[in-house]
Amino acid sequence: MKKLVAYITTGYPDRDFTVDCALALKEAGVDILELGIPFSDPVADGPVIESANLKALQNGFRIDDLFEVSSQIADKIDTLWMGYMNPFYHKGFDLFINKAKEYGVNGFIIPDLPHEESSQYRSLCQENDLHLISFVAPTDSKERIKTITEDSSKFVYLVAYAGITGSGASEDLSNVISDIKDVCDTPIYIGFGVNQQTAKEKSKNLDGVIVGSAFVSIMLDDDLDYNEKISKMQHLASNIKEQINE
Image 1 (cartoon, one colour):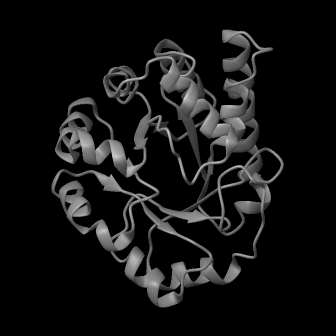
Image 2 (cartoon, rainbow, N blue to C red):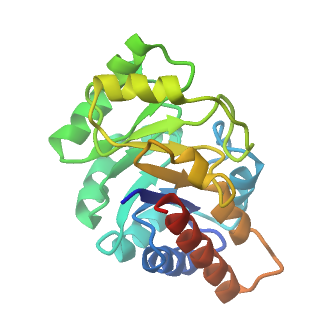
């Protein structure tokens, strides 16, 4: 069965919502949760996730909120921390390693960490039975794909297009998918621009999809109350999970 990964921004609108939302998404069929670490300059993300990041920071998000949420959910749903390198660097990567092990978080997604600079962090993760997710872009050559994926684990994050999340762009990925499969056996999940309308098509020949902006846009909808947001996100998750496995 193909997997569904859901991204949500930690601490928006508050910590309790993040916990309740995470557990509700698990019930709706989400296999892996990306807990997003709010950051003021999320360079790979579009305006939807950027807005949620900034609102969470304005509401007083602290890294301790990430740890507290994780302590309540990571033993119930497969959890990864998704964030930019700045917080990991300034707080110390060892802190995140230790807290991940303490709470049962399974690894990290760091989109602005170049592969060439990731070796020391990847080694730390491997030593602690944690995953550092590898990214492949449609512009990568076969040689580079082999380099990137040779020590990949859990899944390869295939970026659907060159750009930012949520923009809905589209590219022919058949060659890059073939190149990845030629050099590694790690499952391939596709992210960027995956939503209810595109998930089925984008998941063809792949092992899973990563959905972020579609969930976060519901979180940002001020016309919905607390329970309506969670219910709508559950419905979206179950719908996408069904579509990619038809």
